[in-house]
Length: 373
Image 1 (cartoon, rainbow, N blue to C red):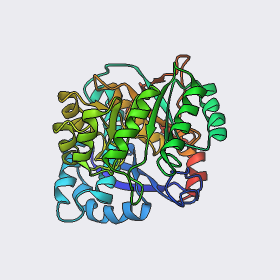
Image 2: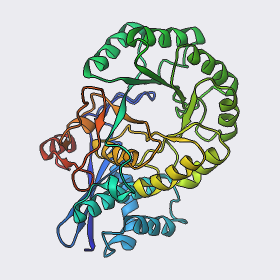
Image 3: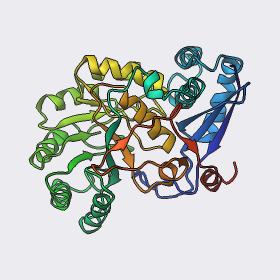
């Protein structure tokens, strides 16, 4: 079975507010689905966190190394693409595109063998995992309402992030966290994401250290993106004194970018985005490296339903995975795939057991959010 073509689908019209300045336009196009088509007609699904224009530009470079390759050796083929691009886009949008291709190749392999990707990644340590509702901070009144909505849906863990946290003053930060804890009670896990990958993030280790102390007083599980993404030594210093777990990694690509954070014990939790970091193949490699150093893996899931399915597969195949990110109320996650994700009575998500990623595209929804493109 050989790779015959790679098709792309741009998602737009329902892009969720991501917290960046000016980030409320639903027509902004960040997520691109990819379909790897074989000469036998079988198709694999993947997802890239980058624009269709950048994916298509990357494919101009990648297609000569991809078309005609076997469709059943995801890890080798993806590494071949990566090695071939050292001079033409190491990391960045090219790696984001390789990520989507890699996910699609794992989906293809599972479909060809009639097995779920989680089993092919090494085996299922669990058949369900705890999702956390991932949402933005709001002013206290609206925050209470939005938290009540997620509790009503059945979530038992919630992450809050970005504006206005860290953008006004310490007193307001504490008000937000106190409001959240009072709203959800003591039995629901709370995580806080400062959003240090925002443009020109102003805070350093001193701010992060004091904020971590405050978060510890409210039983917050982890503190995410407290510093700029590349501040490895800052994260290492912060982790040494923080009463809560320290997490980062959502913007990093390739396992080599994660290695210093893991090996220097700069974080408690690594958060690779499989639609950016290199896909399932690269995610598995760095996940085992993290495991060997006592670092947890929590995939970043602010992308699509295809990405969440890949996160569930990897999390099932890692012995110490505990959570998976779930962006709530987002059509690209909740509408474009079939079957839809459903929380069980205990607020857990089942790991798909069907062949490949265990999902298919809902073609009507894809048509609606791609405008036929």
